[in-house]
Image (cartoon, rainbow, N blue to C red; front, side):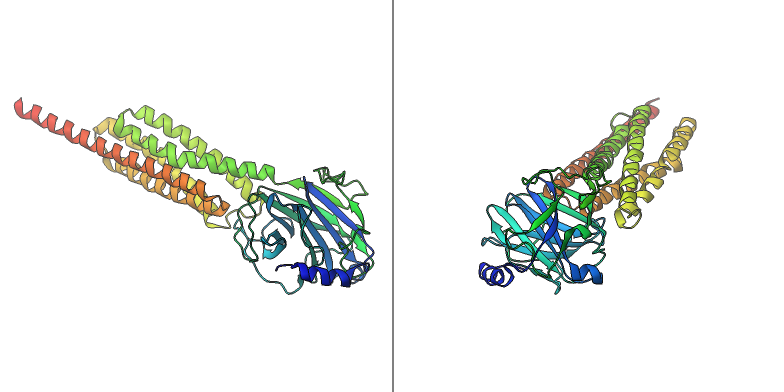
Length: 401
């Protein structure tokens, strides 16, 4: 959906002076602002048109506003520059940790006043059939934004990358009542019930404690920084465990041959793995998606299977002290561990896909995984060669005696 300058002129003539507005606004970040207006007729009927505005400096790559408590299942409206002095509005249903894709909506219209204005992207939007809204009370909304070079695309299906930050909040649409079913944002006569402390759009919601102050239309404000911190910690920790620590720990036996060094190293990795699982479960439960997609399901099963590995290792060690031979549990401990390491690295890739991370991180993960795999294979070859050499030397000693 694209708004042209010629359409703006025609629409401005149509809508100018029609709407008397007392809109509600909210600025969650510097320069990033949203504003709402609900016609009295829609509020009385409980359905119908609702108007909202997205506004942000052109230094942001895209800005998103959504209806819902989280991205999954939300109705999202994404704004970005079209490269011709105007903006593109893309309607996208929220997906489960996957970047949302465009889906056309006949009930959504970009209105007069939209475009690039005084260094800001502006999208004035009418939605005729937005659901999950209480037009005379509080409704849940989310917003997100991404900095970077302009997309400069008229394609509403343009590819976007993961947001830099996001906010969850509630809007009391009863405080955004307008008298007419017309664009309230076209013109300078509109009154606004703002929840930011000044016109500069600084992050100063008067209801940032989540309780509201009785006068502000916006309440329950919380940002997604804590969740994102947990996501980053989980991803980094589990990548280090499965791509570096487990393979290197497994290499210690053929390289050094000291079981206690191998066991100590792998114990540290084992404990770190459980910490990473705890972070993952916390994130998944917060977002109501625990065991709902391949990464979390495989991750939980993988950790449960790895929990048997120390037991196999201990049984192998006890048997080896008695027989000085590897035995069944020795081979099981070895090959079972190798299989689980491979599955762990693959599941890490699923996690990167789930998080929709930048390509550079996928490349880095792949390179490190490849290097540690080659190192592990080299250590196996070294250990095998040393074992064969020791066996040959033992045979020569026996033959000469």
